Length: 271
Image 1: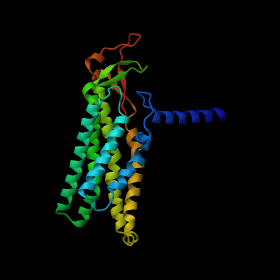
Image 2: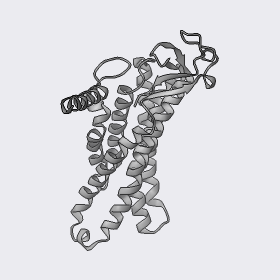
Image 3: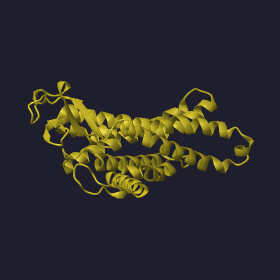
Image 4: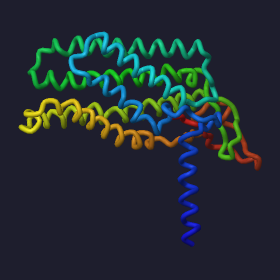
């Protein structure tokens, strides 16, 4: 009995490793740095750069470019692959995402210092700027990089795994759910670290050791990401489900092998 239980645990663990490594649409291995299991360590390299004190415009542009380049890689590697993008489409989406991100980041960094508010509020706003830009641009990035799934649709299949065509409704649902997951991932990073760090900065311990501020901020962001990412991904299942009554007309009268109406179809949401 114990042996069988151990075998089941081992099988479950192995399945989890395969699911996190192999793309469900292509059966190919996802490049390690761009697997969702590597989302936190990969992004923490970018966070370290964004936390550099007194960033110049060039520094802001560089780290936003690096961040959006990584976002493009994650969105592309983990997208629904039943509607592939051409190299030209990928290049256009990439350029649009990077341009949007840099415009938001530079605009916020230039405007926030000019706000007519108290120094404490201004300090809090400045801490929020880099990640506000990341959250906004990250959402745009998802829709730009996976926009073809909305325009052309993605494969939908029955509960038996039989593909029955491409659905734009499924494409919109998949991309929207991923965008919401990205927002939920970034929300704790936007809210918690600045508030907690603001409290810590008022303590005598941190005031006497100002060099601790950056590593404390880094640690708080890492903890927020590690906590938020699994929860954000789990909000929507990997395999999405739609009622055929709410889909395109060609899917509303489908019947299974027994002649019974097919009421639900499924799709790979991507991550």
